[in-house]
Length: 148
Image (cartoon, one colour):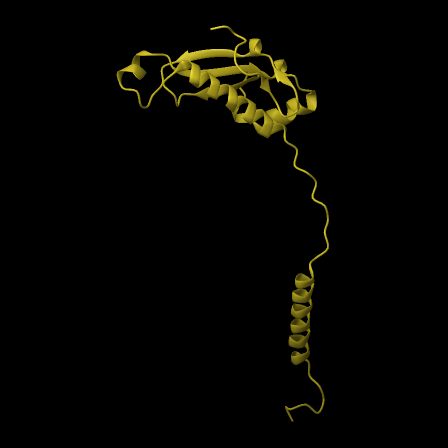
């Protein structure tokens, strides 16, 4: 199988992951497949060094922080796939998963724009405030009140 076949591994940032930077290991998988699964190396483990990714230092730090459990001591990002019975399908699934993980890790949450409270919220706050004032007023003693 040629190393560069198939769709490009393109991130949402526009960066392309070079396939030559991926290291693949095929191992036996568990699950469905009967005797075939016990004798064939269909599960795939992909590894890529974080330093080989086309990212700047801030992005690498974000990936290390968000995907810390998937990064090895050597600095490799590790992804597994074993759901399919075919090694090729598992490799494609692992590549898709790698791109999804990196895209999710690199996503920056947009800043929330401050908004005004709605009319109903302001009305509810006003009602609660007036009820609290009435409770406090009821606790105050006034001369000539009902307790004479």
